[in-house]
Amino acid sequence: MEYRKEIKYLLSDNDFHLINENLKMILKKDKYCVNDFYTITSIYFDNYKNSSYNQVKCGISERWKYRIRFYNYDSSFIKLEKKYKVNNLTKKIDTIITLDMLNHILENNLKVSKNNSPLLNEFIIKVKTEMLRPIMLIEYDRIPYVYKTGNVRITLDFNIRYNDIFNDIFNKEKKMYYLNAKILEVKYNELIPDFIGKKIGINYLSETSFSKFMNSIDKYKGGNINDSWG
Image 1: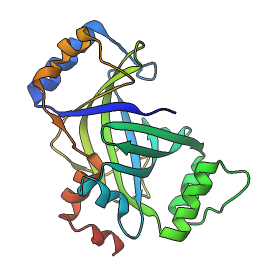
Image 2: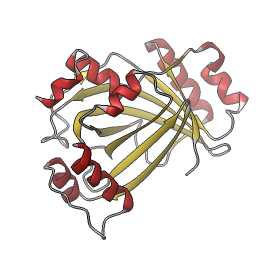
Image 3: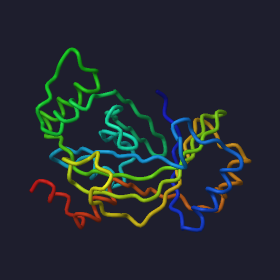
């Protein structure tokens, strides 16, 4: 999969609602959004050096992270992802895993197997050799818009919440802590059509490097990432 451009903007409440109303008039939501939005849950992993966290914290331009993701609390479709980022360019590789595999991962007893995908085996090796472990559970609600030309995807994320408890992840009512942030993400292959850019007001917004992963950890642990090792 090729790299795509990804730009983020931190929005006020007013800008969030205005942009959403503007996008409703010109774009369709993606096919997975059966209601107004869907909920994304991600389990982020890091190693004993806290490499993924430190890469983000230090602004390293080329970095990667592992996460497990599912949607709308549905345990029948779970993905293991590895996300690469080089400046404002991103790409993801992923593989489907079962609920049983996820439970074994969280219990740290999944083994390398020829029946596993290459990504899953790579991940398991990292668990064994670098003490890769779950570090943060992050959820948010997403309004997704798409435009076929240029593979444009525009998302509005809100109700960003987090904790570090991994034994109740499919429970909608679990206790979560909230980040006071609303994020616009604009992803595309080559360019954003002018008519979309104008509706967003893209020339008037300020880009941000806001990371749900880093900000959740900082907010929860007061910047002391080593607390996750107990």
